[in-house]
Image (cartoon, rainbow, N blue to C red; front, side):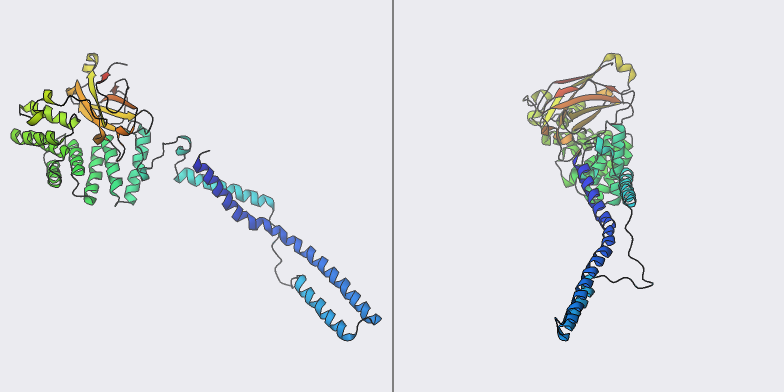
Length: 414
């Protein structure tokens, strides 16, 4: 029995006691007439003895009158008078079967309300309940459960539209599920509450670009300008701004943004590698100590990241298209079921080197470096949806730990 069931049982017992105690205690009303008759009989005996004493001359008239008044007063105090004609009788004691029926009705009603309005699956699946309201796990790889939890979060945000943390969680959840239109709607509500956060603006621009065939022209680029105005060193905003310039074939501007991104990115991070690759693609110098990929630091990745390679078995190449999405995901081996870090690429990028770090998580405050044992997988999705679907191709899960490098993921026939 978990804590919730115990507390619910105690509360039900308390309510039943409060309701049934007065009902059952009414049986005591039947005892009152019997006590009255006994008291009256005793007083009558005492009156007879008083009369006998007066007749025998044992007491005088004054003593007799005083004693009689005392007896009359005791009769008034100790004996309940019978009801007058027309006075409704005292309520009859309730049959015990009525109390039993009322108890069962209360318990059944409470259970029905909880089954309708609550979350009964949480009683048999610990950890499956959302806290959506409290910011708990969303697992984009568990379709029905993820959809239900995100729907509950969306309902909560309709009731509490001024909660920025809720909008941030909803936007990230929609994005991880590949529901980019819904994600862009959540981000639009979020930036109305927090208008000058560079990271939020960059994430919004990224999601909005996904809704327009991965193009950054227009509103996404305007959002990126706002992001860089708020924080000129925001790495994601710099990377995406370089991508937008590349779309316009403004290679000089693209190089400036990517070089700035490389200068501000964490060494060996996914963003740093992306900036190097982009600069190499247009033949621009990377500058400084990181002038070429070979000049990058060779130290092992920090304990806040993991890295490795993903490749596709040649026998599966004909089954996928260049634009199919590749998800590289790190989850806790023993812990929350939602991804701790997610990287999205395309089949055309395979084989590729990847790095997952603490900046790539779905849940604020929950990072891969907080867990000693990780599970890393790669999956190809034709729909671009982060939720696994029939027909997806997936690698064998590989164990890892923070700081580990050279993780090998191979998407092969099952």
